[in-house]
Amino acid sequence: MKLIKNPENKGILVLLSIILVIGGFMAITSGKLEDWFGITWFSGPAMTNKIAFVSERDGKPKLYIMSLDGEDQMPLADEVGINSPPMFSPLGTKVAFIKKVGNEEQVFSVEMNGREPDQLTNTNGAKAQPGFSPDGKYISFISSGRVYIADSKGNNLEPVLPSHRETSEATLRRCVISAYSQYAWGSDSNSMLGVRVDENGNDSLVYLPALRDEIITLVQVISDQRGNSTLVMLPDINISECQTPTITPIAPVKGRFKITGIASAMKTGVFVITAFFDGQSTILELDVSEGKLIPIQITSDVIISNPSISPDGVDVVFIVKAIKKTAKDGLVRLSLTSKTAEVVALGKFADPIFPPTGDRLIAVEIKNDRRNIIAIEPSGEVRELTTDGKSYFPSLSPQSVK
Image: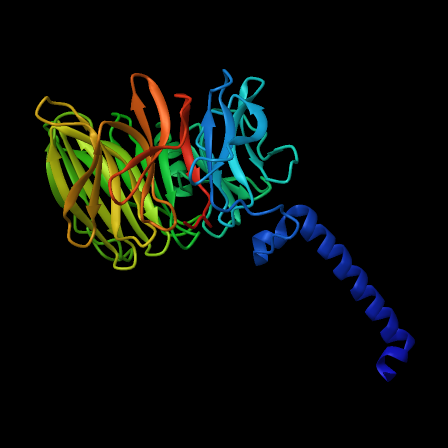
């Protein structure tokens, strides 16, 4: 009590109280309470048990939301011209998307509290793949061949891919800076897997161990003096700068090598990569905890793409597109433990995803130019969640439960 009665100490306490009040107000208005502590009291209600998607049922691409069974469909925002898959924040309080503003594409986020969407970027260039880091502290997207990150309000924007070394070496050699076409966050919210496109149109797979670090090239096409090309990989990513990496040849390449999809499992730190070259597809598994890159399967006559990993990291589902009459289009599920595969459904599909429960699949079914979002139950039963024939880009709230 004597401390409080002391005029000097009273002044210090009052000053500290003012600082705490101002700091709290700034944390609330800037969204830092959610970023730092996961407190969502002032971020609007979390969107649980929901599917966000894009539909052109009113003539233009618009963002909608519905329950897991397809009920209660409603616009999430009055915005039109959405041209990217929506992406939920980890706590389910926001959905990020891309739309055109004037002649430029910008990243927006919207909450379920009726407010207008927040514009998070104001930069030039086409944009793609809006998303959040697993801890929700960063937004991310691709623009003009670069992977950018910023805080959840769009501030402190910076490129992380290409890395500083890639950019510097390209400048010194006076050659084109590498462009990136895909990326996926690591489960630690600090690492990334990226797809880089070289000057010949071949894709390379690179791993960024930490933001602002230098990349490790895992898979690439190399050519000898005779012009013969070989697809090679780095099977062990735990390499110090003093060690000489061991390169393992996978196969000769006559055409272009293209990576058709990458996916990550947040709980296990596993990445799955699908790729296509010379009439055959390959599946790779990257286990970051073990530091190993493992080829799982090479299949002919089909293009495998759009992998999605189950929440427990045990299974992966992907799209199969036939390129010969002996094969069929469909969805295939592969066990990462037993390496056995089974056909989930036949037909044309897009954007397969696992709900957090992992017991069924959500995908887009394509029939006669009609696109509807469907649910595939463990029994194999297929249920249409939309029926307008113009719905696509499904995304599930991370807290969804059955």
